[in-house]
Image (tube, rainbow, N blue to C red):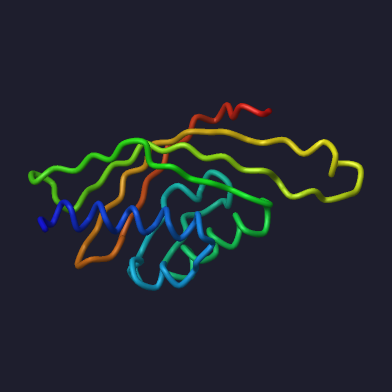
Amino acid sequence: MSQVEINKAIIQRYFEAYNTKNEAILDEIISTDYIDHGQTSYMGAPGKGLAGAKNDLKHAIDNFDDFTNVVEAMIASEAYPDLVGAYWKATSTPKATSPENQQAKKIINFRGVSIYRIQNGKMVETWHVTDGLSSKT
């Protein structure tokens, strides 16, 4: 298996961690010096290290009853084997915070593009761009 294919498999594992809510997967694939530049949009600062990655997953688990992430396309090149790009879509349902909004729960659909940098078999950096105009059903 080429380095590109190995790195793409690491990114698939990352999405699997979210879809299965399995924090242990992050132990396998996240570097201790990891930086998630995408967290600045909703947490105010980049997520750092394995603890930051786990906090991001915990944020999703704490705020959504369910969520599903699907990678629709993945791009990687032998010219830049440490970088993997993914075009993905996500569906989530925010947790109800009161009996009144339990009935008004909406499904949120959004898409994004992420670039992941991998070194020595672990994710070390991530950048995200999401659609910002989620569709609700």
